[in-house]
Image 1 (tube, helix red, strand yellow):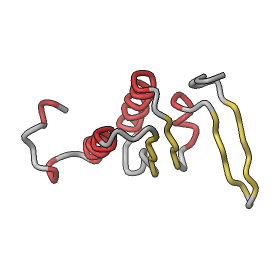
Image 2 (tube, helix red, strand yellow):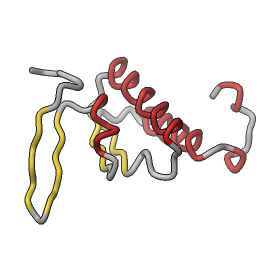
Image 3 (cartoon, one colour):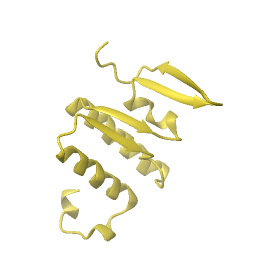
Image 4 (spheres, one colour):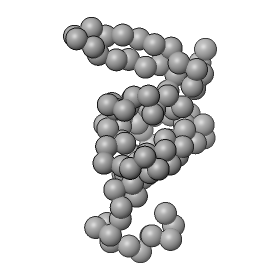
Length: 102
């Protein structure tokens, strides 16, 4: 993104705009990142790249992330717990992704 530092926000792609939003969240010093549909509007390749970037971010910052995402299978590399709401029932699934604090 450094090569786009002088670009106007309206010149960024959807994926780049999402990365800028995440970078802005990091600047707040928050210990938890809340991500609402981070993969929405992204093509498959861009979604994979963002998941990779979020995974790397999780590894380097150790910040908790709460992600709301309809494409929840795509987020498995980033998550250690998945909560799904199905027909009004909440289900918890421990995943093999991140293994913090276990």
